Image 1 (cartoon, helix red, strand yellow):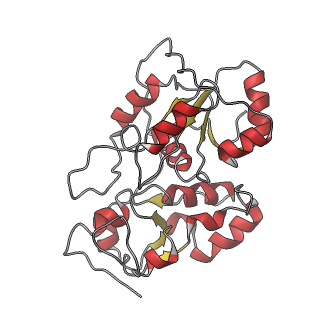
Image 2: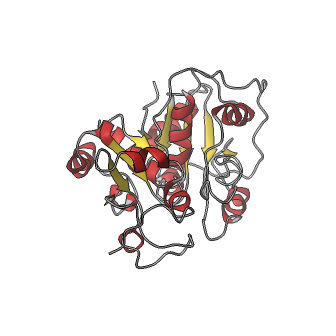
Amino acid sequence: MLERTLISAESLLALLASAKPCVLLDCGFDLTDPAAGARAFALGHLPGAHYANLDHDLSAARNGSNGRHPLPTRQAFAATVARWGVRPGVPVVCYDNQGGSYAARAWWMLRWLGHDEVAVLDGGRGAWLAAGGQLDTAAPREPVSTAAYPLSDHTMPTVPAAALLALPGKLTVVDARSGERFRGEVEPLDPVAGRIPGARNRFHKDNLRPDGRFRSPAELRASFEVFGEPTACVHQCGSGVTACHNLLAMEHAGLTGSALYPGSWSEWCADPSRPIARG
């Protein structure tokens, strides 16, 4: 059975060698160069992998007030994953070359869809190559069936901006952005610098060891327990992407039940009536 959080490169090699059905998703992306991920995929990807584009596959259209990477509807995403051959019972492994920052978004969205058999490749493409894995440039095979993934009531919790405004102090908001962005000292991506008042900072890259793999469950648990009861935690970042890295880390540490604020800072700051904190 596939782990529900992380999978090692060695375990993935063994899984693929077993010839059991498995879907691989290359989620590589660059927020400052949105075409970079597709270029890198064309130059070499894990054999059989599909490219999951953050802007086009893992996000809905922007309307100016819903953030930079709004979630699609579950129905729309169910149709997207069907094109990759995802169906109940088939394991999915998501990876990137950016420490899992974008693979975690795909992981969370598949769990949100109701698909439990999904994990992130720990260490990403670098770990795959270090373990002896090869890269390929061939286009992935089309799935036999493209029937939409069947939806169920099982999903991952989300919290809208209105709930955060209505429940100040009732929920612990955890911001996955870097410290300087959290404090409002710089803002390279959104028009307004700052943070949601009362939010606490947990830079998502602190979930990783120097070699790019995730820290141990015990280390992660100690880091996230300071935020209190998981079910009272709401995770956000700039656009609902790297917040999923923190959600993955918590799940790996055995701390389940936290929610995502999908719109995150890019949605929050688009409405000038919402309060902003700095410093």
